[in-house]
Structure formats: structure tokens, C-alpha cells
Image (cartoon, rainbow, N blue to C red):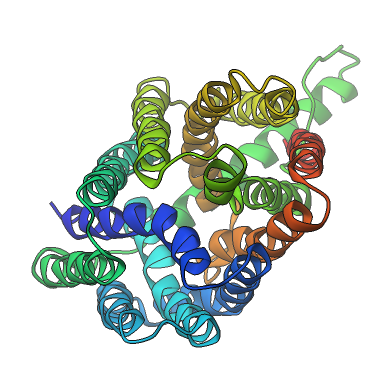
Length: 395
């Protein structure tokens, strides 16, 4: 039940994810303005994620930061309704994002401390299915509101209200864990297992016996690099996507919401399947397959611009398949990150993703406006492939 507040938070940001870029264009902004807004916010999220992660682990208090995130989001989304200035909107969004980042590290810690290591993949998958359904409902809400002609002020007030509901529910339902030791225990177990394998290999060598086992630790630096590259490619591709559908493919707002509804719905199915197939033995192979699949899909988007009769359908199908691949990637990298990240670094995952997002949120719209969407698709596909190589090295 403690997840219920997060469900409403995702409803709000699901609606906002498509609405906000289109809103910036509607009030006189450009693709570059969208890129600046998301990039500035993402750059600010990087240090704030490390700060919130350190603070919650240091104080061993998690609920307060979740409440801060949801309440701040509700307040700032209300402030959005009071201005149509692109510059002021960028500032408000950047400050909101800094405070909003406070919920992510505590959420990951709650999952990893309330459940055993064997349950992490299934629990992260269930969380993503549950909140992903909220995201899907938010997109459906956006589709209905745009279809019935609701204005931007009404949309922003709905987003603000949903975050306020998330705050109230979390105030009632979320509780700090009584004991915090699961992540430390996992790291001790990995050290013991690594030491045991080393002793076995050394014994076989001394006895003159052959052996096939490899003694190898995960490469944390390569893993972190892979996360940054994956996030970079994702945001380069997705930051200008709503405008691509609106301006290049001339789709109405409700049709764009409908495409994102399908993307989110397939993502929920992906989270469910990731949870049902979850195991520590297969998580690394699933990560690699998801990343290389996304790389191929990004390159396929180039064909969309070459087939004008079916470009909207093809782009929608590719976007939907990307949501499915992302579900597997997120579930297994979250589980692996909580195993690899040292104590006191609960915000590292969000911070690394933020580094890629910060750069990608500017590069994607900038490339789209100056060089066209083909350059966006080719750049994203190449970086996805580099992310695959880095993650392959890490494991």
C-alpha cells in the first residue's frame, strides 16, 4: 500500500510528459527552449540526487524526502499556471525538478531494504507495473482532456492536484524501515563469494588441476558509463519526439497522447514480464538485449522519414517497442545498481541517469532544429550501441 502515492505522482508526470513540450511551443517557445528547459533541470538534478541520496542514508529517514518531493511538485505546478513567460517557466521547472528528485533515492532504498535480494527484481518490476499503470492513466487523461478541449491551465491544475493527492497518501501510508541492513548484507555476501571462488581457483592451480571458471568482479566504472550513455541516447531521442509528431507528422494533440498511451501500456506489460522472468542469473543478459534492441529501433526510425505514406504508423510502432525494451532495462539495472552502489550513495543511480539526461535534453532538440530528425535518430542509435558495449564490459 505504501506505493499508492507514487501511483498518483506518475499519473501527474505521465500527463505532463507530453503536455509540457507542446505547451512551450504553444506559448511561443522553440525546440531549443524545450532543450534548455529540460537540460538545465537535468543538470540541477545531478547534484541534488547525490545530495538527497546521501542525506536519506545519513539520517536513515526516507519518508520526509518523499513528502518534500510530492508537496514541492504540487506547489510549483500550480505556479506554472500563473505565467506564460518561457523564461520564467524554465526557472520554475528547474527549481521544481531539483526538489522533485528527492523522492527517487528513498524509493529505491525502501524497496531494497523492505525485501530480500532474491525479491529485488520482482519487487522493482511490481513497482514499475503499478506506477507505470498510473503513468498510462495520466496519458489517457491527457488524451481525454485534449479531445474535449480543456485548456492548459486546467491541465496544469490537474497535475498539481494529483501530486497533492500523492503527498497526502504518502503521509499516511509510507513508513521508514525499522532495520536497514539488506544492502550491506548483500555486499558482504558478494565479497565472501568472490573470495571463495579465488580460493577454489588457487587450490586447483596448486594441485595441478584444470579449471574453467573466471574470477571477475563487476566493473562499476563501465556500468556507470553505460547508464550515462543509455540515458543520453534515450533523452536525445525522446526530448523532441512530441514536437516531431506534432510538426513533422502533423498529428493532433490527442493522437500524440494516444501514441504515448500505447507506448506506456506496452511498457507496463514489459515490466510484468520482466518481473515474471526475474533472476540474478539472467539480469545481465536481459540488460544487454534491451539496449541493443533500442539501438536497432533508433536506426529504424530513419526509415520512417523515407516512407511518408506510413511514417506516423511506423514511428508509433517503434516508439511502442522502445517502451517494451525500456521496461526490461530499468528493472534489471535498478536491481543491479542497488547491489553495486556503495552505502551512502543511494542517489548515484539517479545522478548518473541525470548526467545523460542533462546533455541529451539539450542535444536532442538542438539537433532536431539545426540538422533535422535523421541526425537525431542516427546519433541516438550510435550512442545506444556504445552503451551496450560499456554494459557488456561491466559484467
